[in-house]
Image (cartoon, rainbow, N blue to C red):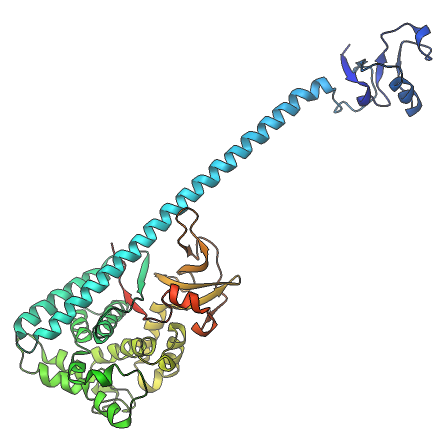
Length: 422
């Protein structure tokens, strides 16, 4: 026998029951019997019993039906399991938030350190420019040291290619322009497998690319309105000014001076200052022509002349055969990716800006989300598109961004780039 005690409400047709009273005290023929129908169930429910003994071995109810006594421990176990699962979920969420917060801290720390290094290198470059007239040999010594430091920084292995340094530094922007060109040119030279000697020439040429601007009045080079034709002609002489001022300085090779002169030349002869064509332009100047034009489009003085990085890439590509070395330009586009650093993008109805680009990945940058905050620190949330399975829908213009976000995220300032800090 397998007797259990069931509550009256749990009785079912098919249960074999044993009534605890004499047969004269109920309307059934026997004290022990199988419940045949719902009518018998209703009679049993009116006899006044709270529980009735049931022989499960003789019952004809599915064995999966358990007694209240049997279910109570199971229900308790289930409730306990649910409570444990809930606690584990809370702990897991807290651990995930902690891990996410630590990752956010590491990313933001790398960005802050990179921006600090960028500013310090710009300051050094400004000092180098100032010494060329009175202390040329010291300027060259500092230039070589800075070139070496930047080359080493470019060679170091990171998960990311560049970091956006979009604060507009105080002082003249020509030094930032030169630093941007140097950073991009060095990485492109590495992408093209240039020799270490060639990379050194590229680096020095790029760092000196804006040197001639010192002889262009600041009222022209920093003008916030359209330049007149005479002013444009004046500005276009800056490579010639640089070449003239750098002539005769010991330790500075002729190839560097000549390349500085040719940076703004174009394959079809429409460049300046001499209008030379294709093969007469040094390979170093051909490379820097690409990076210099990209920086010029991203960081123009006038908003109407300034392009988002992804649009600048597209415009460069259209001019590939006409103005630039196509091989160099194609490798530059591959290096920068579909959404270059500084591009503002849409994904899942959210808006974000690309802050770091992932090496060897065209579609999975690190972005700062305009709408989400890091859970613990309440600061803008950085999102790794690859890890978060984010698919960027498209690039958008600053015109599509709310004014408060333009200021908060420095979206109307510069697109300066530097190598990720170690």
